[in-house]
Amino acid sequence: MFDFQGGCPCGPSSTASSAPEPEPHLPSESEESDIEIDQDGVIEPDTIEPQEMDDLDSIEVTEEMMDQANEKKVEAIDALGEGDLQKALDLFTEAIKLNPRLAILYAKRASVYIKMQKPNAAIRDCDRAISINPDSAQPYKWRGKAHRLLGHWEEAAKDLATACKLDYDEDASAMLKEVQPKANKIIEHRRKYERKREEREIKDRQERIKKAREEHARAQRVSSSGFLFAFGGKRPRPSLPFLCAAGFPGGGPAGMPGLGDLLKDPEVLNAMKDPEVMAAFQDVAQNPANISKYQNNPKIMALASKLSAKFGAPPQP
Image 1: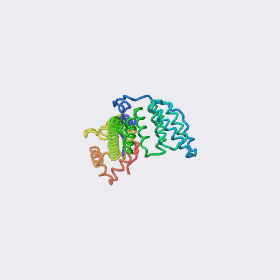
Image 2: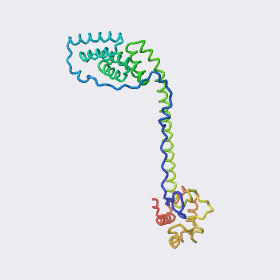
Image 3: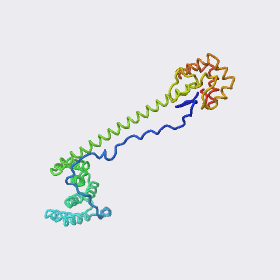
Image 4: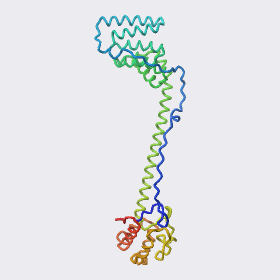
């Protein structure tokens, strides 16, 4: 009947809105970055220089071009053996231009980029090689090494493991043994914070549900306690005169708008002299849920509707 939430009509009505719910706590970047991994051997990323790769797909490769590409590849391998990295790089590039659809040429050039400490360039060549032949182990091996140079431990472990699965290589296996523990450490670290986030989300959800249920129950109590005027959100003591009025028909305290007019209403005054009405009011004051006992009592509900209209609260159906 009366929705005097958080206060009594004897004093100022509570109009302040509920305080906003605090935002769920999320781990800060420093929390999620709290992991130490040995970065020995990690280098600064290189700037990838443009290469003539996109236009090579349209080239029609002849048998003669294939033979020439193989010759360039042999020369490049020889130059690589002699330690002439730039010459080897140039020769592999010439071979690629002659036969751009041979995956091994990109993998070989990627190996040169690795030796030249250009991991990003190597990754680009390996990506190209894998797109041509995803079952070749060499591109995965060199891309794994490139990721290792950049400190991309998870990517390195994944590529090196794939390389060994496709074609076991002792060099790739040795590097895999180096990077796998670091990758595992990162994975476990991430899982730990994912678990924490999930636990926080579950806890926050449970809190929201709990608050919603409490609010619903409170609203139900307020809705069903049309005769109850709450004092600061607390149930009035049985010894307090009902309706915040001292000997109600005789008058009420200041700060209760409309009370003076209400006390002049003969219907209200007569009703409050009725022992049955006062008993009902006291009953509901003690337990708001007891209002349900009087839903079919026209005398009680008529007065309740009148009071509700007077104080601006809509009567309950």
